Image 1 (tube, rainbow, N blue to C red):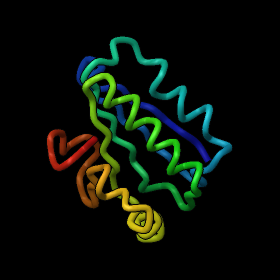
Image 2 (image 1 turned 180 degrees about the vertical axis):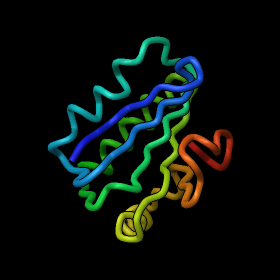
Image 3 (image 1 turned 60 degrees about the vertical axis):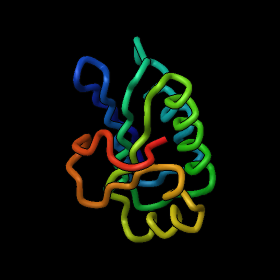
Image 4 (image 1 turned 90 degrees about the vertical axis):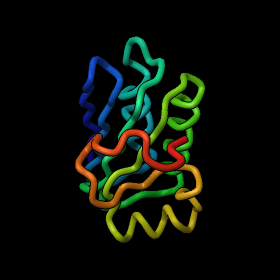
Length: 117
């Protein structure tokens, strides 16, 4: 399990890649990926779940905290390429009402689409 971050477009796009288990053990590492970015106004965060194979309720909470962080700073959060299993979890939690979920987009390609945050 790991969290990797890539900052693009002069800090206005942040790609967060989750691989393996997305659970409470990643909470500090996940928070650090977005809190340690200077100049966080208007940032679009793209959470790529294509390599995640498990998600628990704490991961849902982490996504909500990221959404609040972004929203308070005029930004947005996009969830990208969840597996079928993770997508089912997101749907049960009604996350499609809170986030734009991109199923086939290339990372960071869909800024401005949908509800986003």
